[in-house]
Image (tube, rainbow, N blue to C red):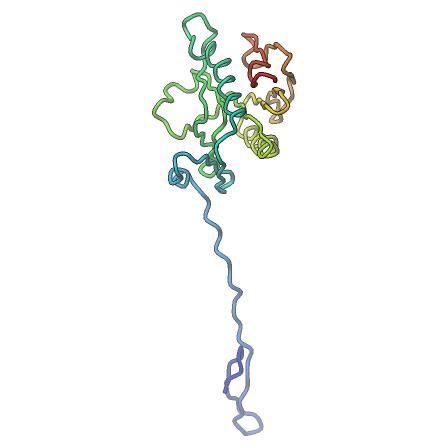
Length: 219
């Protein structure tokens, strides 16, 4: 009988036929490469679940805290009214300001920024498009304790790599706004503002922004 892992053959040695065992080669089992997630995987999620894909990995998050939601709405109003809603009606105009829309940077990188803006000459008709394939000119992420490192490191690098020109981080917990501008592929801080500040912040320096109004009232 053959031994496990060996093959049996017969050879003639000294005029006699003798059995000879040979070690059999079994190639190593290769692991199948994991399937990279695409937008179809996001569409399969329940509508009330926030999902994003980075480097082909799908992640989900629960709904936002009320202070996160309020900061998003307040910022969308403070920037969206003069630069979007009032376009042609006395405001600086020239932008689309959209909350929580899917932006596809690559087939396997699809994000949903809290607030994003596009100059209108770069994005003509976004209304029936999902996801949007045009890279935003400006993005703001609202920080929370569970996602701060992810927004500051992973998403910030991804936005820079794909040429987003302006990036804001709004922290309702610390009541601080940080603004960055892309310079030679790297983020350069253009300003940090606490809730006492009234500032003109790129790329929306045409209007004054009351930073404290972006957060819930102090007790």
